[in-house]
Image (cartoon, rainbow, N blue to C red; front, side, top):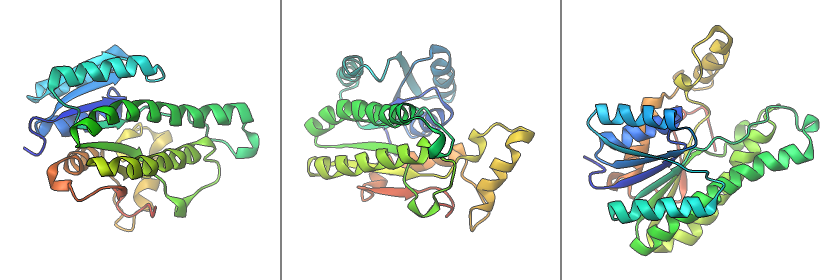
Length: 249
């Protein structure tokens, strides 16, 4: 298995994408630690992982509380012996409006929260990875400068800001053997509700791809596991495009 004896910490592990990564990592032998605010969703993901024969533990942690984040990851490292993979999937406070219609305070708060949660969780993981001289920091979303659309409000700006943060981490952590990689996506088709109202958005993901296909949560889990493994060890300081060609970042 690609991730045997590895430890993965997933912030936002109770969400759709967090669950996909947890299942992908665990299927390849990793022990996954799921972090979030809602016990029920975390446990639901953990139950699926365990039912498939994997190892999963959960913790309720406020990722805006740096002390709590550090205490948790220190406990993970003590328990498992290492922190090999860390990924932050905490959703930003998305504001889908024209920029002219968004208050300065709301815009700054939305982008600031995205940056703060990523900085806090990455700093915590990086402490252990630098000490180990190894580790993988995964980011999700990415920056697709070629396909900016009107009405994206704080959302794309927030993802661009996080991608800039990832680049800075790459420059500072690569000398310590730590890889930073973003999974670039324009959307995951089965993470959208399967309702008539969302049908145009789901179809839009397919239509945007030159292959006329859209990535699924299963794709996310498999690619994330590969990138985080030694098979993906040459992938570093970059984005990996998982959009079937819909994104060009």
